[in-house]
Amino acid sequence: MNWAKKKRSRLVWSALVLTAGTLHAADVVVGKYNGPGGCAASSCHGSIQPKTTTHIPQNEYSIWAGQDKHARAYQVLSNSVSVRIGKILKLKSAPNQDARCLACHALAPATEMRAQSFDVGDGVSCEHCHGPASGWLGPHTVKDWETKPAADKQRLGMDDTKDLIARTEKCLTCHLGTAEKFVDHELIAAGHPDLTFELNLFSAVQPRHWKEPNDNAWHGVQIWAVGEAVQLRDGMSRLARRAQGTVWPEYAELDCFACHHSLSKPDESWRLTSEGYYGERKVGVPAWNTSRYAVFRFAVQELNGEMGRQLDSDVNKLQGLLGVLNGNREEIAATAKHASGLAAELARQLNSKPFDRAYTVRVMRDIARESGTISFAGQRSAEQAAMALDSLYAAYKQNVKEDGELRAAINGLFQQLDNPSSYDAPRFAAQMQRVGSLLGREGMAGGGSR
Image (cartoon, rainbow, N blue to C red; front, top):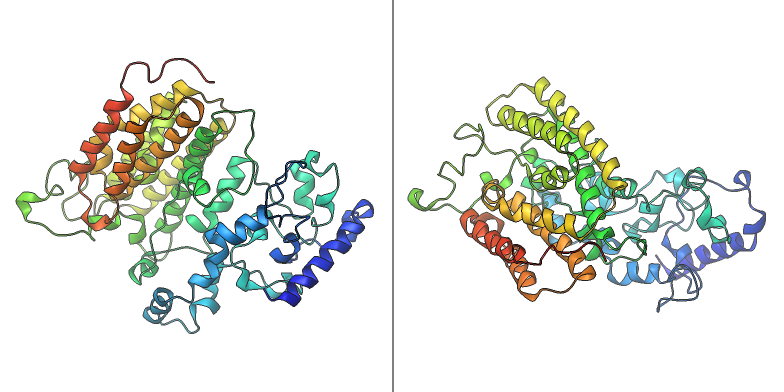
């Protein structure tokens, strides 16, 4: 955004603030996007240093602009890889002008929803998550705004990001996709990365520009669990949608590295073993990507055993249906929809559950104990296990103590994921067993929450 547009945004914001005390719903234009310039003033969210005299640090814009990769998502569309992808796909326009690319790499609303100050080049900016600001930019500065119900804010166009289910839904519109915007096998084959997600870890590395509740010491565990539940819910919905679509099978639902892996001699390949052909999969049929359930199932076991057994049944059925050529599409869609409903209910339960040290360590132990099953399910499942253990350990470290050996062992899991096509399941399983042995030490899970 150029200087003139930023200046205009700030003037608009200032005018709204001056009249905030007299603004009514009928006086504001709900639905238009202003762009992040309206948030950039040092007295708003553009402070360089966090402030301690207000309920928010007021440096949120500065963190986003300086450290958050979302702010550079639009610029990515002009790099050499994106340009090459565009040529392979024979796009009619450059990636930074193509609607399919802009849907996730920028905030690109319809023209009539853009205020004068809006610039698509700002990338994935404030309003992408918080909603079009024209209706709430002024009102949200008044003293009692924080106490207003989320529904009242929504009527002015502000989306709720405090609720973990709603927050995850917002992230997954790009990090997993919707019916309107998605990454399919065509796009992956052209060079776009496959989509992976873990709410707590992804939030931590951005980094966070918001405060989490300080009345729940184990909130990070809840972020992880709810994020996984919503990811499974929406992943199953996507599978059902694709099974009922015109293109099937959609290879993006399968494990990429079941096909795209480094070849080795048959007697040296871990894939050519009974463990490599887990479940009912027929020889020669690519494996289904079960990573969104591979680790989450342990959170379910600790929460609701009956629903966990139902989910296990659905996932096992889907493995059988997807493990043969031309599996029954109607059955796939129906089973995936049922599993999505179960995951939705589990998300609601996890969103209100209190978490503690004992639960956290039990889930970590459960994950490590299933080292073989997770590792042989493929690189994507191993990746989810590494991210889960990292998030859960971060909560343990924050609330109990730092454990250098355990930290190093978890880091060792990530080191084995650097080259996905060379992923080695037995080696990863051995490292998981190392993590498990450290988690099994006496006193590791003793006591309650801090």
